[in-house]
Length: 123
Image 1 (cartoon, rainbow, N blue to C red):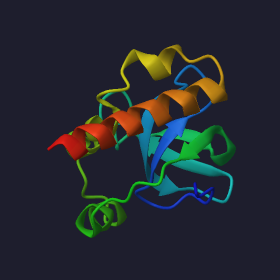
Image 2 (cartoon, rainbow, N blue to C red; image 1 turned 45 degrees about the vertical axis):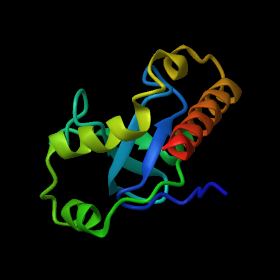
Image 3 (tube, rainbow, N blue to C red; image 1 turned 135 degrees about the horizontal axis):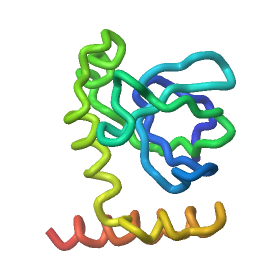
Image 4 (tube, rainbow, N blue to C red; image 1 turned 45 degrees about the horizontal axis):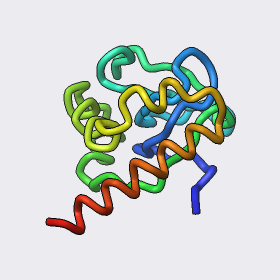
């Protein structure tokens, strides 16, 4: 089940705007309605993007406690965020970016997750 409550260090996907379908990491919670997100490339930790919580989809993927501790103390670097997001977004590529609706984004994500499960099972 997907959580709708944003937490520090949660991985999320943008649902609206020109960055629709892009993966982010929540680096700060402003209030119950807004969060600050970064991807380590175009949106760095020093200048994160402000997003409404209703415009993001929070993923059920957990980060290590050490990474969350770095986020809490503002000592995480952009390179680390980029590496984390590459692990979950590498296979999605242009598929999610080309999706025109929330349903298509969900379908693309489900396909990618099922492919990852199959590749892990083969190992």
